[in-house]
Amino acid sequence: MSGSDADVIDRLVGIGPGSPLHAIRLRRPEARTHAQASFRALFAPENPEHMTLPERFAVATFVAGLHGAAEAHAFYAGELAATGASPTVREAVERAIKDARGNGPYGSFPKGPLSREDVAGTVYRMESDTARVLGPRLGAAFAHVHLLVFHPRDAEPAALQALLDAGWSTTDIVTLSQITAFLSFQIRVVAGLRSLAGHS
Amino acid sequence: MPDHILVPPDHPVPVSFTRAQLEWLPWLEPLAADAMTERHIASLVDAARVKSPYFRLLARNPDALEARTRTDKDIFYNTDAGLPRAERELAAAATSRVNGCIYCASVHARFAATYSKRETDVDHLLDDGVTADLGERWNAIVSASTALTATPIAFGHEHVDRLRRSGLDDLAIADVIHAAAFFNWANRLMLSLGEPTPAPET
Image (tube, rainbow over all chains, first blue to last red; front, side):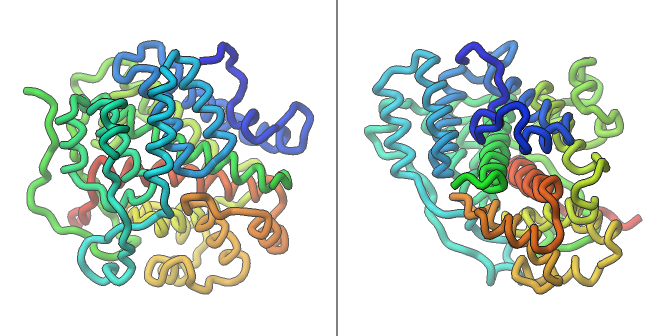
């Protein structure tokens, strides 16, 4: 963490005190406060035992990168660097983003009338040089995160088994899932409010 | 026993979007209700949620669950102006329809129908998807929710302009954004940690 507890959504949208969007966010004060509390719970936890901070910010950088969300990508990559992650690791995360980008949501429905809406897409497999740098634990996490970001309706118990096999506990998986899902929210709030503010 | 996945017993699988009551079966072990600490219980916010395997699973990270829940409640239940409750639920249902979360869509389609009294339109969204014609104002909300749900995000000025032309002020548009964004959070948890099955007839 870079020391401050400035509101991340405000920062990524570019919302200053006294601006119209600041006033709008204050009309939903609990949502504003607890979106930031969610960020704190996931990225500045009192006890990070279930996932190290470099793991958390590597995943966050990957999620933001997959969304093509420039501000969030730069922010989380900066926080990853601030955890002391090596340039080799940071480059591997960026390489994974380039390899894993796509367009979602896609995936299959349970077999039946909705099958006509099935949309095919790729299952991410990390390239071996990248996997060597990031290791099996983060490699398994990135595969799961890619599933959640782009094709969550393809989820099945086997995906969770792959995480357990790579050393993730049940509680670790809850935290990993919350990080990915929360960022899918935070990044969309930022994109939406930027458009509402008239930013490009 | 080491951590392991749960394999639900044989059960019917919903194959269509529906407003009917569904249950949710976890693929990972929730906390046992009688093993929860005060902190775990407090993280549920609403004590009745101790009955829900979904919330008892998320309670494994209580700080994240509590902040998630308080964010959710203000986005959907804060009645100080902005978007009517029915249309916040419409945005949630549309987002769930796009991502393919049959469980989330069932809950929020029920709420949308209850608050709007427009059961036929809600069913049209569930049956035919987000291109169903629901009248311009609802179409604008569904289209904005759909664009915000795409990855990379496809939401832009044109969606804001269309919502404004439909009579939404900036607070109401911010409510659409938050409701759709929140269900991009909720859908991913519901879809990846368990699966739905029809609730037993009561």
